[in-house]
Image (cartoon, rainbow, N blue to C red):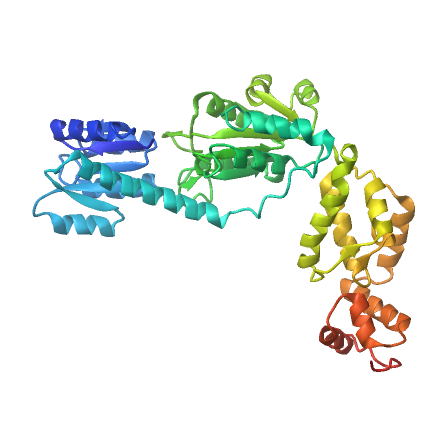
Length: 452
């Protein structure tokens, strides 16, 4: 359903258009002239404006200019009398979608043109989302029993519009859970928009969430839609909710209650059809006790709470997760054929991983850089809290002060181990022979080593 504003000084025509579009399921508001329409545009948000070209007090072209300034994402259709096509073409140059000559031949003609205009608005919004599109969704779990309750909860709540609160330590995969929920919901073809409250300064968070009008603050040179508007029809993921200042929490509470808000510095009410998913890495009871989270907001967010277990409590997921992460990491660092030897697998399986998935990924990336050859060994894996390994890694990293030094030393070590056989050295390093020759030239390595 779209929100449509009809502006025409002929009452009968306004009523005809409203009835035809309401029969198609849309919500229609009316204005008797251009000035009344401009006032409504300043207060409310619409998806489509249908306006007569000639009206008292403000004509359709001036209203179109106002509409472009107030709501640039809104589509506009011009109504024009026979013989005024030139003016309609001028309006299209100003950004109107199309024009329709009066008298309108049938409700069907009107509905078809309105449908096409709204479809373009949807496609342009989809193009905007594509620019922010996330990479493919990783698996939520690889079958560990500790995740069964999480999967079951997400499947049960996904078909509803209920608000979900995800609780878990940092790095347990709360955003993956939120994206999975979105993918399993009826909103899967709509946008998924995420905001991490801890990653944005307090001064920017409100503008990011709600958008702002031109001149709302220093640097606001144009109106800007907020993330909530961009999430219309989809899912909004609000991470680290305990990091919001009280004023923003109060404004967010109103959005959850009424599904409407105003941009920063604006007075126009904007409606947002959004499914909310929130997350925190802190215990909700602690947030409430410390005043970090309003109690009324908490109860709005925690309609359906789901707790994600830490990685140490889902041992069955650790190894397949590590192997999946290594595929991506290997490609990123240019070593796509890396594998884990048995000792490395054992160390990964038994480590505590207090930083959860994020720590595991970091450890694997370091190991991919340090490893010589195609296989990552236990000595290359550095879980947090392992003092001996941490000291060993520090010693290994302190000798070469840059990655270039580290790479040079690794090449020299492998050449020594292979007796200078460059083909075998390239195989052990997991790189091509030509690549090895390029690196030997770059690092001026070669004296004392025989050819292959």
